[in-house]
Image (tube, rainbow, N blue to C red; front, side, top):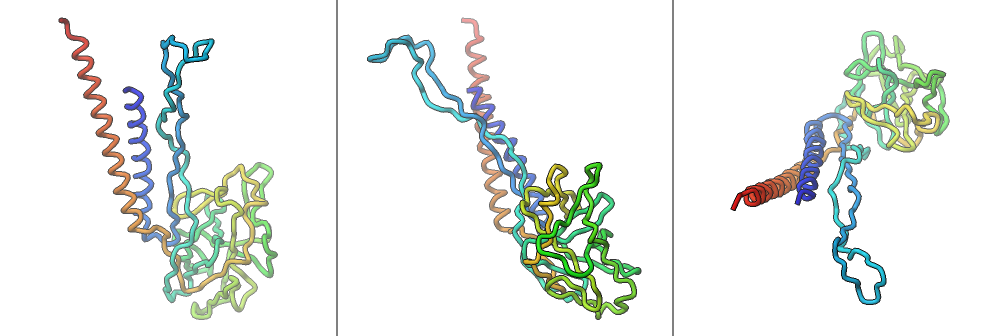
Length: 287
């Protein structure tokens, strides 16, 4: 009975964690370029149940072996939170500093915390001609041609990460005096300049994780020379933004399912508690 109490209680904890992930997805349904999260769980080890103190020997059995009753599950535990990197729908904004990527690539940003990556292409030009995010992060790019799958990141001797030497901040300066002349083609090349926006693709999206403010970072123990590569298969769409890949209806249905499962486990815990209390009261009564 107590095993059932622990199993149901663990189920309630997992459903609470899953509800937190789902509500966060719903809160970011309008966040540009947001990628929905998913909670994955793993099962506790199965226990083999045996009937003890049964001294009867089965026909043909020379030595006593406890009869097997079967396996028993012991609940679940959270494995990890994963991110769904599927692209969201694209919407036209007619804003020349808005960009959406068709494909699996990410924009590269230089932030106070180091190099970060995002799918949110809602950029702006500051007074000095720097292309930045709305949070003030510098958009990175390169000059000239870049080979396919060229490593975009390197490690310093102290183990910290930095952008490849061929990458630097996109600074237009006085090259584009009028915003109406600011054009970027499908490859990410900026017209009337030798600059291109960096498009970074990851061999394994499990090598990056969210770092707040709708950006991702590379895990420090990853071989960055093999993880973050220049992508020639993705295309840039100027005047568009990528919406969140959160499906509102699906997340609402999922949240209802979680709440019902939580209530069911809660009732099981209450029932076990009541039965245990009744057993203690009856067994503890002097007769």
